[in-house]
Image 1 (cartoon, rainbow, N blue to C red):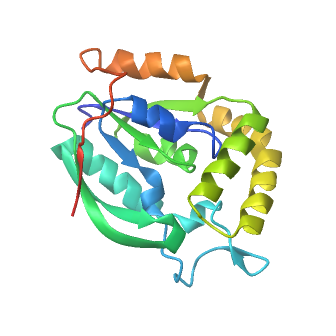
Image 2: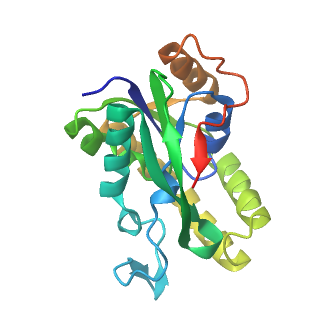
Length: 209
């Protein structure tokens, strides 16, 4: 079935996954677009608040189906999720344009490796390895700038994520992910698409619908 490789890019929130994705010119799938809407009654909760770091807050089946369609047909329509609103707003069409690689990044990428391989997809699993304190600072600064949630929630979540990073890394490696620093991850992605200008700003392969 697989005619191109899915690069599953995982790592802690704030580790630079989106930055690495922007530095590549291969088609990209933003896995965070598969979050469930905030009014979904089945969302997992902790102390009465939605736990957005729980994989059950995310539609895994829809993500696998979209990646399978993208590999099989060269195009797929995916939702466009607005994190600040906790809901889907429209959709977008992603086209591979014959690319030998597609990059899929998001905090739940580690949960996708086994389902993607079970679906017959070729996968390169990368865990982006960066220092915890750097991830914490980058994540908090980004989330405050983007007004993703109330500052108190962002700080509490950020401290909890920092505490959990070693466990998350260990779990990812146990599932088959390869820890890499940014430079090595760039080279690995470039090796899948040697004819692609990997350092250029990415072409607009995603079209909003």
